[in-house]
Image 1 (cartoon, rainbow, N blue to C red):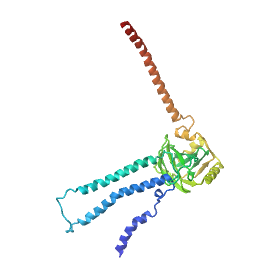
Image 2: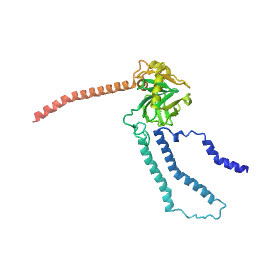
Image 3: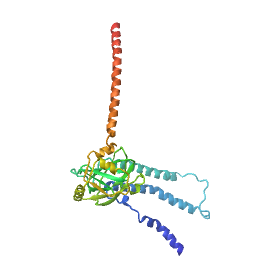
Image 4: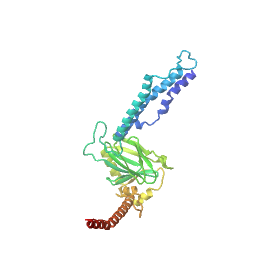
Amino acid sequence: MFSHLIRRGLIFLPAILLAGCNTVVLNPSGDIANQQGRLIIISTILMLLIIVPVIALTVLFAWRYRKNNTAARYEPDWDHSTQLELVIWGAPLLIIIALGLLTWISTHTLDPYRKLSRLDAQRPIPENVKPLTVEVVALDWKWLFIYPEQGIATVNELAAPVDRPIEFKITASTVMNSFYIPALAGQIYAMPGMQTKLNAVINKPGEFEGFSANYSGAGFSDMRFKFHGVSNEDFDAWVKKVKSGSGALKRAEYLALEKPSIKDPVQHFNAVDGTLFHAILNRCVAEGQVCMDQQMMTDKNVKDDAKGEKTEKGAAKAAPQEVAMAGSQHHHE
């Protein structure tokens, strides 16, 4: 009786262990994450078409051809079966082709840089809807969100209207991080001196978890924020609430905010320097620093000038030779 209960408990142990798991990835609230979740399910099913039969046959063969089963057929000279070879090689090949097609299509359809073409499977994006732009900066160890059109900024809090496309522009202050809201879309890396993008949409109202999915130091595990999917009216009210607060985010305030800290509370800034994100991206927030884009443009101009001078010198050197060749040809005639 006791052994029977143990066996029954072992059967249900995986279900018990998975009962507390957060399955938001397979039950998301954004269309991009929903498509990615279906992609995981379809890929898993395709792979299980091979894995399950192989495991089942392994158990079957081990049981059927066990040592004390003298009734099993013993055929030591058998070494080939065309039908079996077709199954062994044909089935995996078909699954690999299916996975390849699925990967090719989804890689282009779910490209994070690609503008959205729909709100969900049933609704295209209305022509009069303008995407909400959010500039994201991964700091040590907190998240800064700048709303350039609204002229506000927040720390560790993000809000967006339901069924409105969002265009995230993402960078980092020091080390590489990963911007991830499982309910919205897949993770996108945030890297210093570089800008990545993510286009997504939230389809259900609610409060969702956001965090860094890439280890970045001591405060990494607390680098979390709340993402609020709200109605248009509630979003306008939220923006108004942020603007009614005190404190503007200018370069001096950003340099203080940029210093490493852990478990930062939510902060609101009722105004923000319009050039701040460009300065963060190009590593020139502090006074006297040269922006990377300006430096690269200067280097390009110097190289172009040097190339032009070299070309002019070459042309000047070639001119006397051309005159001499012309005179020689005239004398020959």
